[in-house]
Length: 399
Image 1 (cartoon, rainbow, N blue to C red):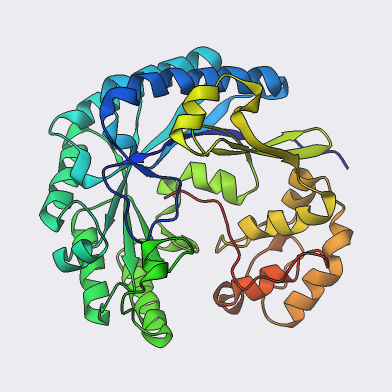
Image 2 (image 1 turned 90 degrees about the horizontal axis):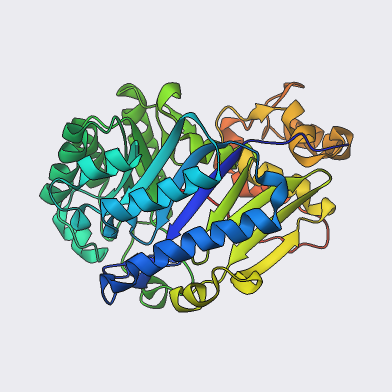
């Protein structure tokens, strides 16, 4: 079966931070100074040119969303963000009203910058708040305080940016249930349009993994999730994905494209891409360190990896994203986005329905409440026999 061309998004990675947080396993590097910023903008556009030459089949496809991730994109001044977006628009067609998100650390935004970001074309800001407890923020290695976060959010709203996401973490070092709920209340008081609420986990190759802080036990972590989820729903923020809460009109379109197995170009150090071309789907990843990326952004070896997704792994790749959505996806999307015959997964679907992990609906692939709680167990069923059964399923996502 032929793959039906999916929507195309653009991910732009900014790799620098003021300071690396001890829990972070993203591709981020402590900044030594802003002198490389302009060279990096040139590298991004050269990288995009190289992608469009190498993957010419995407050149005429419109961009539905853009996401500046990091690192800390707000380290870049508005004129540099404008140069990037202007350069992208010169090379690619954007749909009307395309969502353009920029991740922002509240401790890196100078007064008045949001006006400049809005003029540059950014229409959605995602704030990495994480907590409104100054003690917890210090233990997380964050460079901002609660008051600074509240001030930054209000400045963005006053500048006219209508779509605001706040990232919050729970199960923080020595956090109580009341503390987790207090963070949610402080976030709601700021009237964002979207909330990302996720549990602190100890990722390999991080400071926290080497020196674990005292975290709440699993039972308390579940209690925090249930209580905060109920409070968010009561406040008009229904859960629509594993860690995302918003009314339908305010859902993050960029991430929904990921979760529905859409395509995306990825430019920048360590950026990942997924591109569909007729009968195959290719995943790409750029060189990871800023130094190597700056040296080779325009060259063919800017790619650290490029490989088609093997057909035997497509069902798992699709479900790993689609089943994060509370409402799941239309069953027809499976064949459209993978090119596979749905009959190839029918026995797995039937067993998952019988086990109470999927809703019994022939027209949708939708996890039940148990399926959401046991998502890894559900996803493992779609792994090809030769793939290891990992206890933790990775997924690509931005707030």
